Amino acid sequence: MIIVQQKPLEKIFAMTEIFQNFLIVGCDGCAAIVQAGGEKQAEILKTLLEMHRRLGGRNGSKIKAVSILRQCDRQIAASSLHPLIEDYDALISLACGVGVQTLADLYPNKIIIPANDTMFIGMHDTKEGKFYEMCRACGDCILFETGGICPITRCAKSLLNGPCGGQAEGKCEVGGWKNECAWVLIYNRLKERNKLDLFTQFRIPRDYRISEHPRELGGEMLAEEKEGIKKEEVISGGMKREAYSELMKQISEGKFVFTGELEPVKTTNLHEVLEGAKILKGHVVAINITDNPTSFGYMNALVPSYMIQRKVGVEAVYQMTTRDRNRLALLSDVLAAGALGIKNILVLTGDHTTVGDTPESKPVFDLDSATFTYMMRKVIDEGVDLKGNKIEDPPKFNIGIAAAPNADPLEAELLKIERKVKLGVDFIQTQCVYSVEQARRFSDAAAYLKTPILFGVAPFKSMAMMKWMIKFVPGIKVPEDVEQRLRRAKEKSKEAFREENVEIFGELLREIRKTTNAAGIHMMAVGYEWIVPKIIERSGIA
Image (cartoon, rainbow, N blue to C red; front, side, top):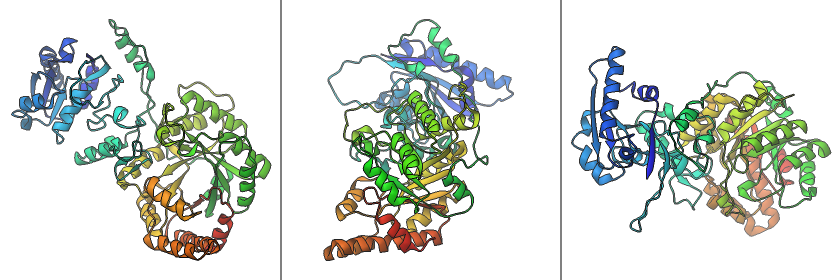
């Protein structure tokens, strides 16, 4: 049994405000049984909407109420509604989230407005057919904002502000590129309807009290509790922020900067990390320390971030993913980073746990990179946590985000970045680019964001690394001439392969500097840091 609860009338009025004619569709299945969506409720809602419009001086709306046997059944929905559908701009569904999505899928050119929140789903005992999960009964339905496609169930990370960087050509990396990326589906659906303003809308962190387990429904208690949960006003970023770190000071001064990257591995020994930092020192202004990259369980990035600053004297960019921590743990680590003198944090969502070395572990994703950015701005600018609790001596950081310059569709990626830029970020570091055309295309497209971009460049340690990245890393595209040059060099000798790397990527750095608006380069040469100084020297960039 599926339990639904009607949304507050003022919210239904707001969602229907721009439409003139709409069809109210009740459901005689589960929604009717709980008296939230049958024929009677459809007629009551019709009367209330008509009264609301008359009181507002809006006459002439065509509103009709019908009820069908089951909205979740495509055949029943199609046969019942097909004769009526063309006369209306939008449909108001009184079904559960599955019914709303069935109508949205059946009539992709119509706006489907959910009038109910799906609270939870009971057992349905059947051994026939195949079922796809389409609603998690989260109790806070946002299908109006997402084109009738639920990101909570259909996104592997349940992101509210997607897409993440783990999609390529509209496919999700989770499950081996077989499943559609939910947020690309949402983007396509909203673009078709000319509703991309809904795509860019920022959704604040979820309040899990609505859907905590075990759940009970009784009387007015749940409704009262839900009404008490208020969504905050989100103030757009874009204000001029202080440069707290050396990295941001140099960017603000117009210097073309270089950053590096180091990877703490499955060890308690930081010798290699510190040695790598010593090699990069003097060539980069800051060094990223990765946070369980590709979901491999490594040393917490905070410790090596602190150690390279203290023992080597190179500034750190502390990477933090939302994959492994809820908002409590994220805040704890942010405060610890402030106490240890960290000045840069790169906010990331993180790869899904299923692609790492512990695929059976439970992913967290309490926040996504957008809501984490929102939390960081509250910490830095207001000195409070997400709930507004005061922080004594709040830390000061410069915040970076990641970008996928080869994302397809690119517009969806840009709109996602724009959402975070409005919240307030200081710099962008991209995934790898391997041609100046890739960098120039992204630089031109993202110029309107007016946010410093550091293009990611990752020279190849071996041919095997190149093949692995092309096959497994989302969006990686290596030009054929680069592949051929490296292959021919490898056939000669290891030394020739290394020298060709230096030549190819030295040229790439020089061209990016010369032909784009890049603020710098993020050099990712984990495990062979020695090549970074050679490439920078070959580029001729002072």
